Length: 117
Image (cartoon, rainbow, N blue to C red; front, side, top):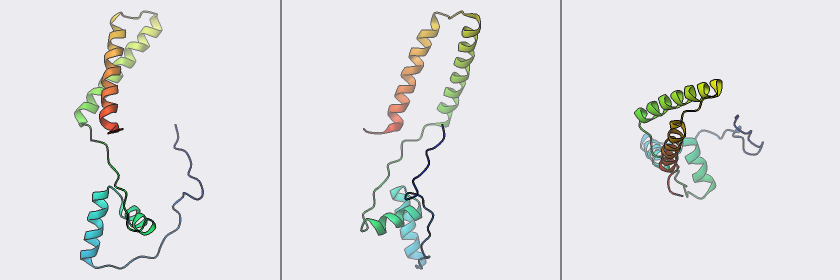
């Protein structure tokens, strides 16, 4: 599914004049932007538009690359099993148990990555 288009008023097409600052000021602003989880441009826009009040973006916890790799392998195997089941009309009895377990694992991962609700 494609990403929805932005409204004309939401597009970031205009540029502001470059702002001059000292090296120390730049490092300070850059560190604050990083702490807020924002790009330098987004941080400066928020500071200017919201009287210096910065909304910190909480990033979801990172998932271990090994877990993603293993889940990907499970997905491939699951796809092969369902393709064979649909082709030959034979559905193993264990398939429903595997579906339930996989669904529970995916729900748990979504809970961990979506953060507090």
